[in-house]
Length: 322
Image (cartoon, rainbow, N blue to C red; front, side, top):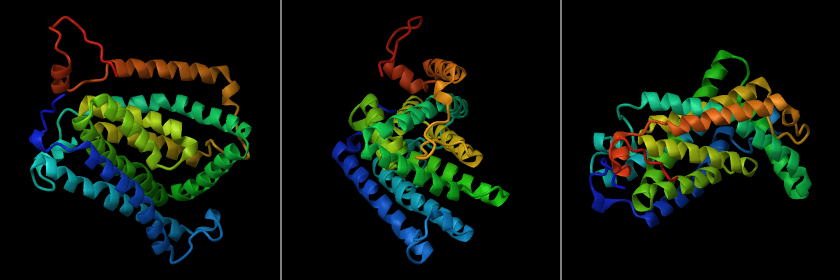
């Protein structure tokens, strides 16, 4: 499939080069994150556990996290993309290559956000099922639960208290920054590069798995992979980075609300909230998934993709095989 916004086909990103960039970033991100954490803490930041972290330290850590995402994930993308766009670092062609500043993205973005909300009950159910089943895997399963419980404590600290300032900062860093920076890297550059060197379907599948691995949360690997596939699919269909960014941000905001409300999963001490034995809950899951697939069925497709992938004459409907 040829992209109309690929002005230099002879300079398309090669698969090997994209994999090298991906491996470098996956290795560099945790290292930079650890160095920034030590820098803002002035030593071992968690010697007394996450609960002992002060408010000022949490604020510095949030700022460091946002800075790390911008430096490691977002800014290099523009330099990498300009090699294939033939334009300046923030030139119009470079931005269009990444799917930025394109018209007609508002409606698909709203639909993508609604789809993400419809996915939440099913994703929450998967997490609850894992929480129930992992203890039966022995030491390995229990260690995953304990790691998730520790991560929950850490995330609750980052989410801040009930103050307006803390809530605004947590939304900026935990919701908006990842939605922008991670989508720039994973969808804007990695998936786009794989689409041009492999195929759209393979690019979506591969990038979704890598997206889950990047977060290094083995307990949440399955939900993160499903999220990555959904976000990748809507970026492929829209070619507008606003669409996956809104979907990603919606998921992060939903997770933040659950954290602040005290409704979370993965606790090693309280493995089930009782939802899995509630028929009304499973009714909600079925209804939300049905609406989700209906939404996906009629998700807006950009005209260029429709023309390229649908050679059927008017009056005939082509069913996408993805």
